[in-house]
Amino acid sequence: MLYVKNGQGQDQDQELTEIWSHTEFVGEKQTNNYAEYMGLILGLVEANRKCLPNLLVKGDSLLVIKQMRGEYQVHAPHLQPLYQKACDLVKTIGSIQFQHVYRVENKRADALANLAVI
Image (cartoon, rainbow, N blue to C red):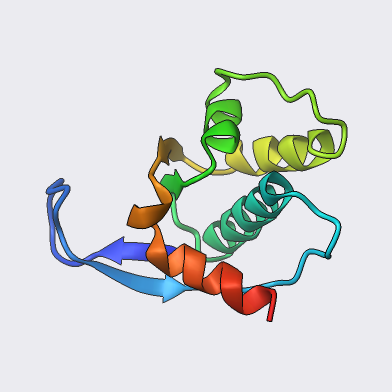
């Protein structure tokens, strides 16, 4: 999902408007972290397409967020190509931050994920 802030300024509590969302089935044998990386990659591709120069990525996978911040290494072989693809896309964004949020705070993403497996 991609959101834009309504109004001007840096107010963290500003209302957000969703400008893009997507669901995609990633396969029955894939891990949650694989799906998280796929969602991240799809969002980064769309942000580039929309020429969005500044991003705050919120994710409920602490592993993926910490890997993207460079705090954890990527040891899982099936995640390494996805991590590299995400890193390549990050280089095309002007400014990007990664923030962990708990799943309870990420209900819209959870709803989209559930749609992808129906």
